[in-house]
Image (cartoon, rainbow, N blue to C red; front, side):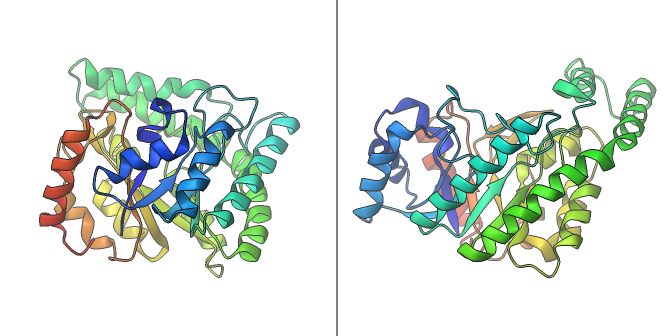
Length: 309
C-alpha cells in the first residue's frame, strides 16, 4: 500500500488542509501524518479527514509536535535520555501521539527509540561518512580501524540504553494493545542511535508474542549503514522479514544523502521489494526540497515497476 508522508510539505503551509491537498495532487490518497505538525495546523487536518479527503495510513511520533518545540524535531525528547524529565516528556508526548492516531483511524505509530548518550552527536559515524565523501573506501585500512573501534566502543554501553528504551516500549505496548495500534520501531540512520541492528533483533524477539510491536524498515537509513559497511541492506531486510510491518521509502545518493526521490539514487528496489507484501504500508518520506514533478514522474515509474505495491 503506497502512502506519502506530510514531512515533505508541512513547513510550506499554515493550514493542515492545504498540506493534504498538495499531497493529493501528487497522486497519493493514503497519507502518513508525520512529526513537525504544529497544533495550529491540526484543525485543517481534521477538516480534511472529516471530509474524507484522505485515508490516514499511520502517524509518526511526535504527532502533533510538543507545543514548546518550535521546529520539526522528532528526537526532541528521547526514551534513552539521562534526564528523568526528558524521558517522561518523551513518554507523555508519545501517549498523545497514540491518542491522535486513534482519532485519525491510523493503523500504526512510527517510533524513534533514542540514542547512546555516551556517544553524542553521531561524531563517530560522521568521521566514517566524511572519509567516504573525501573519496575513501570501506576497504581502506584507516576506515576499517575507525569502524572497528567505533563498534567496540558502542557495545560497551549498549545494555544501559537498551534497558531504558525497552522499559518505555513495554509501557507503550500496553496502550497500543488497548487502542489496537502497531508500534512500528524504526531502523535508524546512525550506529550511535538505538536500536542498532542487533538491538532491533533483541526488541523483536522480546515482543515476538505481541502483534502490537513490529519492525519498520527505513530504506534510506539502512542504506546509509550499508554504505559504511556496517551491514548488507538486502541481507538485513531478509533477516527481519518475519517482523516487518512497513517502511519509509526514499533513495540515497552516495554515500549518505537520503530522503531523495525514488530512482534518483543508488537503491536496488528489485532486490529489496520482494520482502514487502502488497498490504504493507510503503510510505514515501521525502525531503521538503524534492520537486513535485519529480515525485509524480517517479510514482508513475514505480507503479509500472511494482504494480502490486
